[in-house]
Length: 124
Image 1 (cartoon, rainbow, N blue to C red):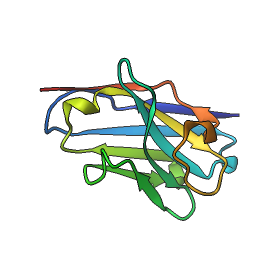
Image 2 (image 1 turned 30 degrees about the vertical axis):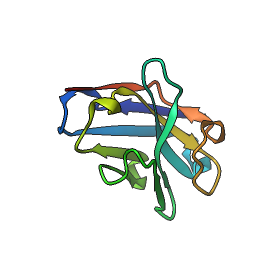
Image 3 (image 1 turned 30 degrees about the horizontal axis):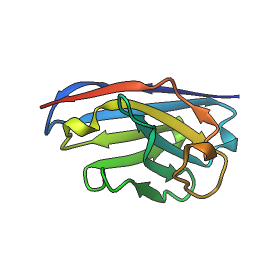
């Protein structure tokens, strides 16, 4: 139905930057919101940010606001996550997710489709 593929993860030192990409394919007309979640070792998966595919509204977790920027390219069915001023606590597996709900939600239960995840490691 819908396939999400993340890319762009890697190892970076604190203060550095990374840009993640998530390409969606399949029946993407049913997707209204795309977002990013992350899961650090030993912790639960948490909401990072999301964007409305149509209106462009965004939402960010307080922990990343001002450092991360989510953007979209609807023509390419792709969402991006620009991560600046990275901190060691940003280390996690980052997952792209897609939701058929027309407004941004911050719980993973509202997202139906998920990517495979990409590892982001920030060293001190």
